[in-house]
Length: 342
Length: 116
Image (cartoon, rainbow over the protein chains, first blue to last red):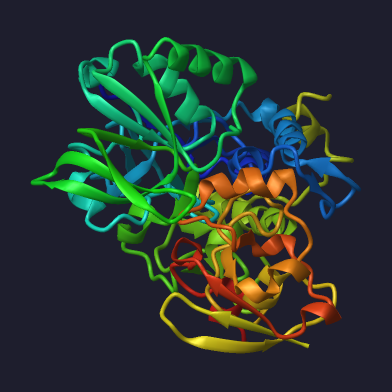
């Protein structure tokens, strides 16, 4: 099923800078849609360090990554942004009438005169274990997510990792698997205690085998896995017979399809000017950690500043015939109406 | 004081370090491509190093948090540390570490790539 939307501005990345861009664009009366591969807004702040303190947000002596996200969401609420969460920005094209058209990996499209890339360090994607030849098995025997449980029925599964994903899928797949081995380097888990308890129960019933060790190699051919080679704490190795491997080692950031958008790139960053934060393509802007310019500092507050200037330029691009008069939220009744405080 | 870093490509680098700086910050500040995605918050596992065995006893103990985050690294052994969790001190002058391949950044960092 596909859907299509059109708006004033498409923002790739719902991290703090993408969220604040909604605010600045909103003050310029521009409507925004946000696309993010994560299933929640907040980007790194929500995914990597929701509980960690941040000390360098102006006016907030200390707040956590999640608090900052929550406050930004509250701040942009009056502008009713549309979120496309759990979707990866996959391809960029142009419509017949000259709008940017972004296609996501779910097949949906969004078109707009302005595209803002606020993608930080790139898309969060599963970490790929450094096992020689693993690419050939991916999508056939090695999976980083479970889309349909039925595809694992009767399979001999190795789940590697010790976090919530590893434990959740161990508990969910054990009843239907031919065999299931949970492989982790230590006997402690960073997962919900209740899930760990369930895993231990399944182990006692013989439905789960728990092995201490780390994957170091794959055996098989033509993408068909036959065994996972495991290294033990004492340095010895042995094989666990398996036709499916699910590695759950967390997420890492990759630039991803943005690299194919036709923009000038410099070492995986997008060069911009420091007046509009526009890229090599007219109407495409880049703000936050993903952009590059002389003197750039990768700070959230730099991204906020960049978003404010970008919004001025975006308005000129969307409404070339209109003048955007600069106003302050403290004194402008018009802006206060937009913010729904007056 | 100095920190000796071996990169996954086999090159070795002797980096001048400042007292109180995190190893990760020293490596990053000299422009070596270390991923360090979370910026030093002990919240990813992309500054994984193997510490030369003779230095292990001089290091601060591994916290529970670091131990948990190391679950997201590969080829973890008793020499494994997240180098954002080790602060340089006089006692560590000459420390030798090797960066794990998964902690290698795809490209140099912004301030290196565009610095004047």
